[in-house]
Image 1 (cartoon, each protein chain N blue to C red):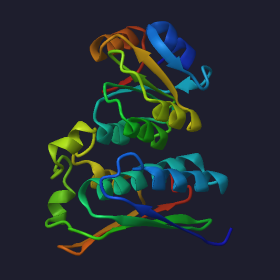
Image 2: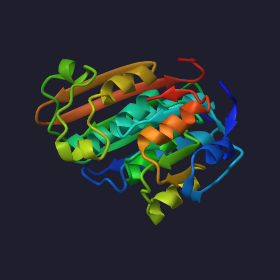
Image 3: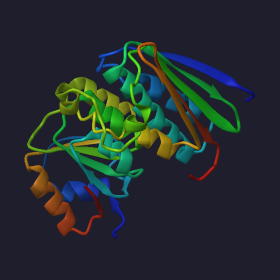
Length: 143
Length: 116
């Protein structure tokens, strides 16, 4: 395995398919023989990022680059962007509408949980253009 | 903490319906919540999720955290799509008529570790 690139579309408000990109990424890592603990961290972080697009943004995509050393994931959406990233990173802060909370999401834990599960995390956002979340999970980092 | 299997959970909680994949699968802990954001944060691998929240994202969340099973309380019956997705992901589903409080109480009484 040298480098494998994967790309998945994410549709805003499509709660039936939400999570399918993360599920596909998880299954690819399983097939490649990645350690189960690393796969679990990638799955949780990518699912949180995917749900953020489904809940908050317009459509977007997930891109992943898998090498024997690490998994790089980018989740990019087309807006509306986050006005205050510092606030969005605070545990418990959420702008999700009541309808989303009824679905079990929008507790304001998404971005902090991506950071918690990854070895590298960065977020860029511009109103109204969109948000780019990038995180890395290193193989056997044991985090 | 006792080392438990899903078949033990079934003996503790009266189940109205079971969609079982592997009754011999080990259970690490119990995570009781209706907030999937919270489950993603605290659930352990091979844990059992006890919830009122009946939708496809409950199963997706269980898939991501590598849960061994989901218990739907108050008789909430999963859809065919939920059962299929759970089956594909190796997750068993149990449905109990008991509420969240009593389900957790029964599990706690039997010495099972908790995450609420």
